[in-house]
Length: 116
Image 1 (cartoon, rainbow, N blue to C red):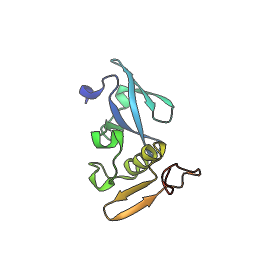
Image 2 (cartoon, one colour):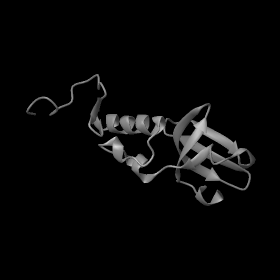
Image 3 (cartoon, helix red, strand yellow):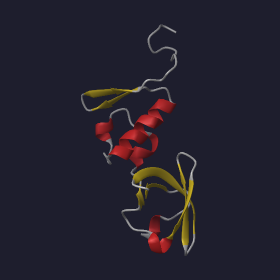
Image 4 (cartoon, helix red, strand yellow):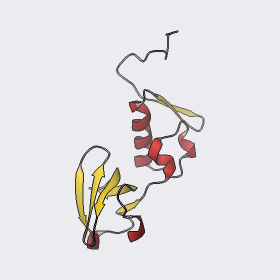
């Protein structure tokens, strides 16, 4: 399991019954420092770690996809993370196979419904 504890690796962190997209900030023989995508820094002692607590994020979850049926990891956290990534880029429509998910942007998006 130590092989992916390299600085900069993207992982899922199970913390307080949630899976959080995180980046390994630093790692030594005793502890692991992770920074969640939402800015929270979490310190974990290596003896507390398990494969269920920290595991590598599949590359398809890192940048987001237009059709979530192509995600290699299809769980609630991956779906919410993908919607969040697309929302940040003003891509409010996302497919899940033949289903269309829409996220309200609470703002006008130029070129979405007009000819701008």
